[in-house]
Length: 141
Image (tube, rainbow, N blue to C red; front, side, top):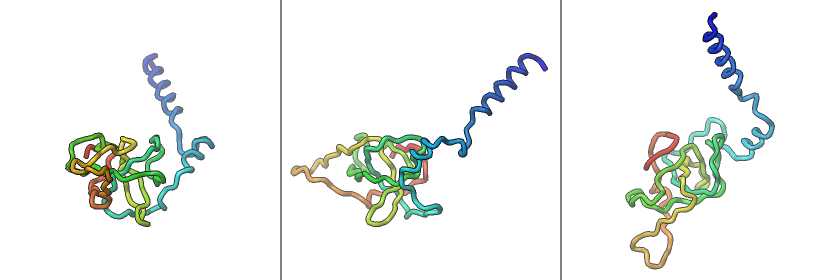
């Protein structure tokens, strides 16, 4: 075996040794993962996605959690891009007693105001604004 082959074999062995399996998670990682509510195994949510904002900081293991503190995005789908278009798929919210799929938008709060709105009241677009798209990691609506 040549020296370059030995180096390659050693680096391959080192990369395999660095891979972690699910069983190797520390107690702290398991506790962090389990502190969020998740839908039951095999749950089929109703068709469509709700666009929501939340103050939660997204990390890698959070996909599939049920968001507890959230609000609808009131920006209409046909409005100009005001920062409420990009987000993360794979979240769930309780809406009217039903566990629904949600897109967690990157912006923490919706700052959209309706152009014809003189009194400053908010508009709730809710279900009529649900998306019927396939799962992706980040989206541009």
